[in-house]
Length: 108
Image 1: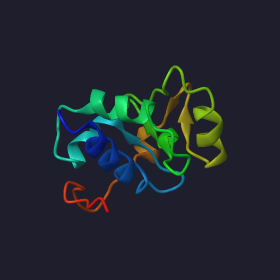
Image 2: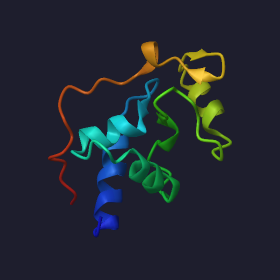
Image 3: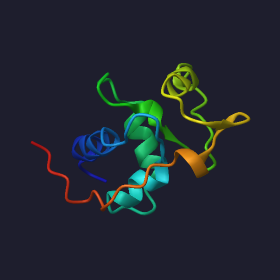
Image 4: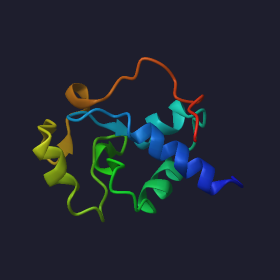
């Protein structure tokens, strides 16, 4: 992946589409951006995000687990009334289902 800044911008733009009260997985974002095996790269992009307008807290792992070093994630999700099942997000109730793939996102 040569264009890290471009990839990161696409990830941020995709994550901004996750509605309040919903979550997506790292793999789901990667798949929607046309990189089915790019979940780890999505995680790296979000870990480096410094834009407060990107709701990084709405992205969880494939099992609904929260990011281990993102201390505010649980509180932010609870404030949006995201349902939990124990320590994990209840993906059956909270997973975002976009209507179309996000690969053609434009970055202006």
